[in-house]
Amino acid sequence: MITRRTHVALLAASVLLTGCGGGAVASTRSAPEPAAEPTPAREGAPAPEVSIEVAPQQIPGLGPKTWAQVPADARQAVVVTGRGRDSSDSTVVLYRRTDAGWRSGASWPAHNALKGWTDHHLAGDLHSPIGVYDLTDAGGLLKDPGSKLPYDRSASFTAPGTGFEGEPLAGSFDYVIAINYNRQPGTSPLDWTRPMGAGRGGGIWLHVDHGGPTHGCVSIAEEHMKELLRTLDPDLHPVVVMGDAKSLRR
Image (cartoon, rainbow, N blue to C red):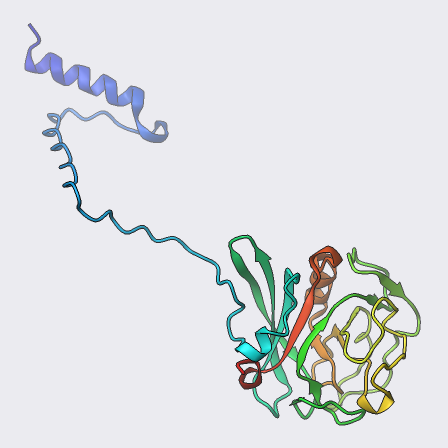
């Protein structure tokens, strides 16, 4: 016959052997009453709700007109969202398309052209072109940091002088990714072929931020440029989607 004292001693030994993390201390208090068995669900009763995070099938913030320009085979998208039509401040987010939908990375501060954005870019107008463009080629003054895109290292990626706010431009082209606006894909960012003609401008790049507005490019911090170069993969057909927030929602 097992007495109450014997029952408590056996319980204490059991706790010492099975305590969570090995840090349990045996108690001499009586064991609690066993919990009641769960009541089985009634037949036909609704199942409990389970929250499952589902990635969106479309990149947030893009309207039907903009979304229609994103190629069906694009699995990476650098989304540049301007603060306003006339603003030179913007943000950059890298999206990756998975079987579950589009997933976003971190949001990075960026600069665009001095006078903001335009639907009809012209050479020297100090606006960044709105649209969706392929990203196929890269380069820079510094050695390749591990770019998956073809990388052209050249001393010609030198940025002399100062920016619109007096900031030095040195180092701005240490790393660049050509935006395929009015350029020949598959060539160095330094190639000046202009399929739409010289009057429509060109040389629109993603490049290292110098702390102020650009002439037409989009600039982000050096560490983020290197991250893009190491991440953008030609096999995933990367594109840039760029414009002020209102225009992108069209």
